[in-house]
Image (cartoon, rainbow, N blue to C red; front, side):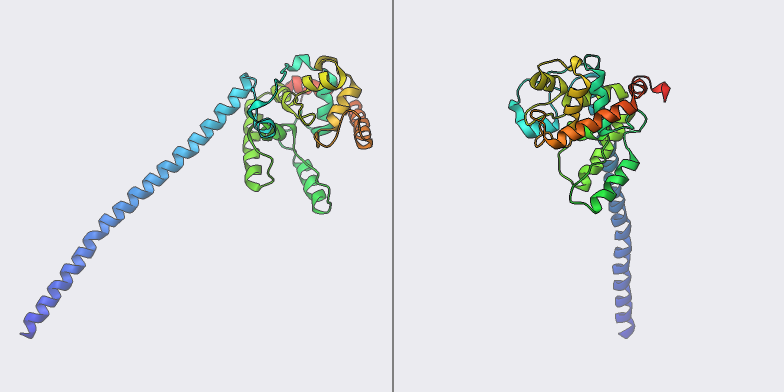
Length: 261
């Protein structure tokens, strides 16, 4: 009797153990399938995001955007008409003024100015007045595609788009886009509309003084005004003109002909 009970117990134990062992390959197979699906989904999203980024950047390489993220956030879909002008119809004074004011290494950098970023970080650590270290290309990426929040996620996206813009677009196109979409007043975007509004002239006819005034308000074009300019704007525009003389026309030559670098 005892032997028979022991045999039954052993048989049941072997049956349970066998069922458990038999279920292991099934569970392992499910795990493999789930992992394979997740892996395929990850690569699909990864390459899809890269493809979308390239499509967006190549679009602005060949087409002038009718609107952009920053303007939509400020003015919505009912924004007034905007005048777009090619770089050839903008004065060299205006082109040089924004380079002198915002990004003096624009002609030679790869979309980022590491020294300026480090200097801005060190300054902001010990000052109530925030200083930016963004290049023209970084500002363009933010204005075109992003939002103004100061989060690490937004900065990471900004760096992503900056790299692609610098990789796929020539410097001349970057500068043309930037000068056409920068905010130069509470409701004014682009140098063509700003030139007409403040000086009753065209973007092509802007002189050093006028261009430096426009560039001087770029840190905050809602607070700072071209007309009448505050004492700060007057001082900053004078500094910009000094920087323009020091940089000279050679900077623009490097922008137009990268082989001169």
